[in-house]
Amino acid sequence: MKRVLQPEKHYSQRIGWLRAAVLGANDGIVSTASLLVGVAAAETPRSGILVAGVAGLVAGAMSMAAGEYVSVSSQADTEQADLTRERAELRAAPARELEELRQIYVKRGLDPDLALRVAKQLTERDALGAHARDELGLSIVHTARPVQAAFASAATFAVGAGLPLILAALVPAPRIILAVPLASLFSLAALGALSAEAGGARRGRAVIRVVFWGVLAMALTAAIGRLFGAVV
Image (cartoon, rainbow, N blue to C red; front, top):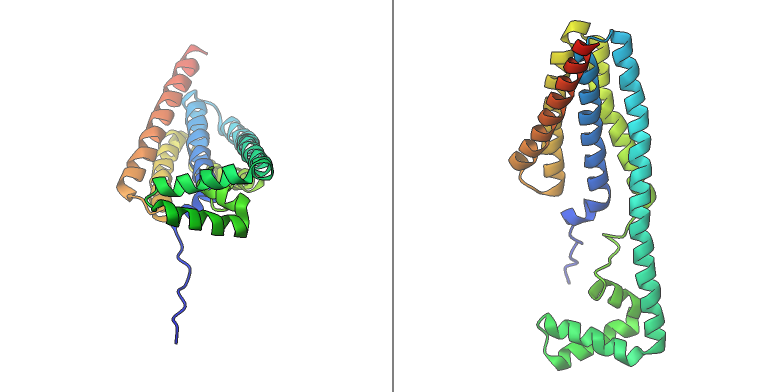
């Protein structure tokens, strides 16, 4: 009985949503925590701190959604333009496109005769798909998905921003400037570890990377808040 192999799952299949989700959550934690710390350092009342935090959450989530949608849409437009051009070239000069495909396989290590047979078979089955994959480097795994990226970024930004905001609402006002950064750095470390695990990368490097930038952002905003608070 012939054994049927199950399709393998690779980490690259998660690139489409993982990048947007990690970016959104990281930005939500860092930007909102930094905003809260900066406003708190200026000795603002709790109500003002929370208003600033909520405004930052809403504005940040919408900004992330719009930014991701526009940038990924631009990528999708470029991909579609390449496919349209390739489709026209296949109609206008099929022999030249077949030779182009053959040369690609020769450069990858196939002998010329085998490369020609492979190119012919793939062309007969799906010429555009073969050129999209092997000439343009496009595949269904890496295809741009603007709506998916926009929703993933906005949702994860809101979740990330909600963590320091909830903490600022619960702890005593004088402790916000200390509690929010500590909890946010812990959240960033957890996010770095989870994203590394989901992407099959080393957790230690990912944790150090996100924590470093989080510390830098919160330290700078705290210094600015303290400076302007003292001036006022």
